[in-house]
Length: 170
Image 1 (tube, rainbow, N blue to C red):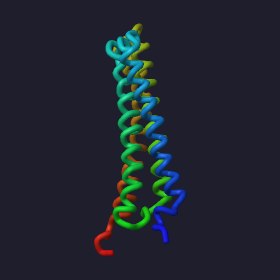
Image 2: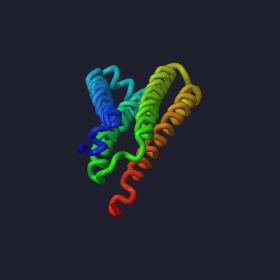
Image 3: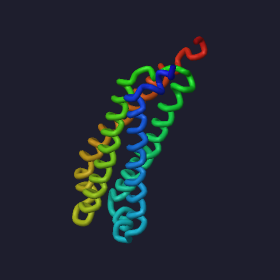
Image 4: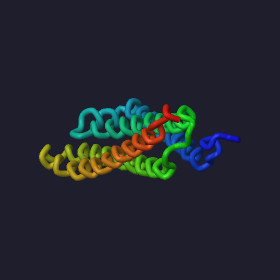
């Protein structure tokens, strides 16, 4: 008889979705970094325009929260049930985690980038105070998406904790 975590096709599908998302985010992040480093005008915009550095933050977050975290989530979701010899506490939480995390990452990256581009372009003809007014709503929206990422990480931590809780007593 196979172990329950081996036969759970839906659970395995979500682990593979985490891996797939990891691969997509890594390709986007690596390409973005190459463009920022390789195109002199892009690099100058990012380095010298007011809030151009927010574009770098978008790049950083797609790599860290997209590529790295998604790989870690996939690995932990794969390893923990085998290690504690029981199925994941809640497949529904795995699904919720996946969708909330991806929504949060995409929103954060988009709004960091939009804020950086808007601030950089506005800084050509506007005062720093005016640029701040332009960028502020984008960063506030980015914060909402950042909160979604935090919520997804808490859901993940809870699910892993509940899966591991009491493993020694069995």
